[in-house]
Amino acid sequence: MAFASRLASKSKQLCSSQVIMQQQHAIPVRFFGKEAAPQALKGDEMLKNIFLDVKKKFETALGVLRKEKITIAPEDPAAVSQYANVMKTVREKADLFSESQRIAYTIETRTAGIPDARTYLLTLKEIRERRGLFDEHGAEAMMMDALEKVEKEIKKPLMRNDKKGMALLTAEFDKINKKLGIRKEDLPKYEEQLELKIAKAQLEELKKDALEAMETQKKREEFKDEEMVEVKSLDVRNFL
Image (cartoon, rainbow, N blue to C red; front, side, top):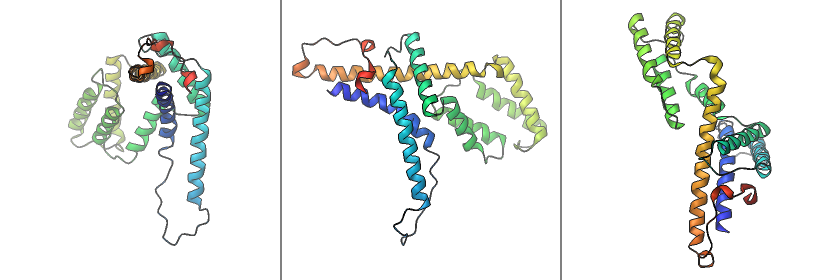
């Protein structure tokens, strides 16, 4: 039925997006000459191995989703926590990045060649916005103010290889973290909170698609007298 196919499609999409995201930086850009021989090349073999790896991870992830119960109830903290735990199991068994790990990897790759602190901070802001994350405490503005203070003190733009200047900036950042109550030892807790927010957002998306699919189905003549079931009573495993 249309509802089953849409719900299955959305569940697989949420799963496959994580698999593909982890592989997106693994394929190098390569051009082959027009006279390239038809035999298998190293580049072809690399692409084949990447495809097989993605396929294996995807099948592993689906295997977990077929076993674990998911309740589509984003308004229920217990359901959100359960879904987050299921997705954690998916990541562990399929060897996928968590959201925090993906962000860290993106930061590492995007900022590797940036020489100055200002461009570095602006790039972090861009990454945050593209990931749909919010600066709830205004930390970015405070960090830019700290940079302004340091650059005013050293009377020049702060470069990342300036050990003395970067030490001054790090000290200012430590003051900001203390003011905001952010401690390094609490990072695992912040990562867990981020994963819960993502889990809730994904459940909201699943619920929205499920409701739309049921509304569409109800308009069909053969289903018009049937009552819509509650979304939270659905078992996603039946649609995979």
